[in-house]
Amino acid sequence: MAKAYSIKRKTNTGFPKKDWGIIDVLRNRINHLIYEEKRDGGLELTKPKLLTIIIRKDKEHFFHFLRDETEFAVKGKWQDVKHKPYHLLEEDNVEIQVQYLDNEKDTITKKLDRLFKAYNKEFVREDVLYVTSTPLDKTSLNLKEGRV
Image 1 (cartoon, helix red, strand yellow):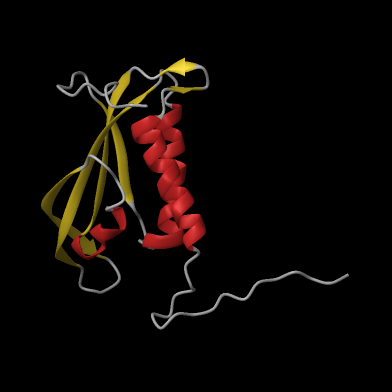
Image 2 (image 1 turned 30 degrees about the vertical axis):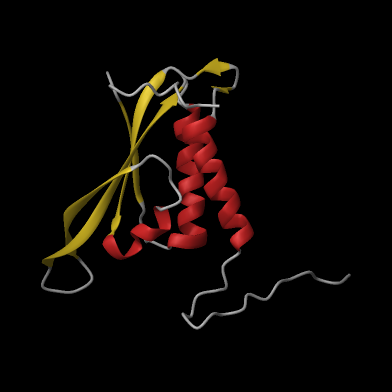
């Protein structure tokens, strides 16, 4: 029986060639969940949430596909444990915030978490991509308005 396999061609960056089809599907699904989803699992989307992504400044362009987002310039400090003696490193980061609606079971948040992990693996390639969702008690934005 013949064995099926694929050869990943290397680009001049040393990374395997990107599959733009998968990347576009991930981007479209993320945007759909954040901006266009009305119901999920039969449940109304009523809980406002704040999606926060913190990424190095040189990688912020990977998230320009998000619509209606706010960006802040922030400084990040982290301890370099690979080199002794340990010392703090500082870098320029960008904080991206997007408000969206979720249901009582947080299924949109769970789906976004899986999609961002896949997007990071396929495209961004950070060791750890910082993405978090926080419940909002109140917001001045009408998140239901503008949804299709």
